[in-house]
Amino acid sequence: MSDMDHYSGNSHAFRLGLRGRCPRCEQGKLFNGYLALAKSCDRCGLDYSFADPADGPAFFAMSIWAVPALGFGMWIQMAFDPPSWVHLLTTGPVLILGCMALLRPLKGWLVCSQYIHKAEQGRLSPRE
Ligand SMILES: [Zn+2]
Image (cartoon, rainbow, N blue to C red):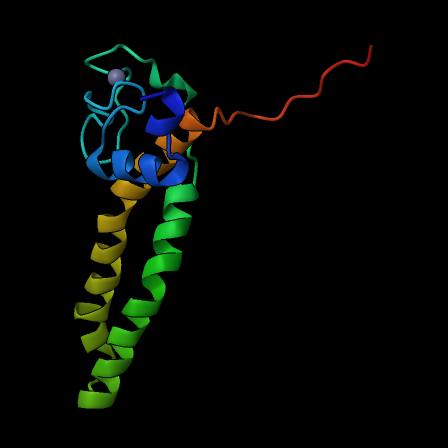
């Protein structure tokens, strides 16, 4: 098996991110807590200082979960016609918990994608 057989790009990065595993050895932990990245891999020692997903996980989580949460809120409104405060106790938690559930796998996916695709800040090279 060559390196290219093992490498399958984004789907590979997504699986690693979903499991919260190191993008190099695939065994070590990526996270130290719920959303905090570990300083380095506890198995192979890969330094995670390259990782900077910024607001990407939050953007994707909100974009993905907004439609189902809106559908849930509309269903409650149309089925029961409740007062507005009921949405604070039903639709609000569904929205927040759904986004929270997506943040960790999306952050893991973006960090693993950064490593696999060697993504980094753009640089201007001096003219020669
Ligand atoms: Zn590792």
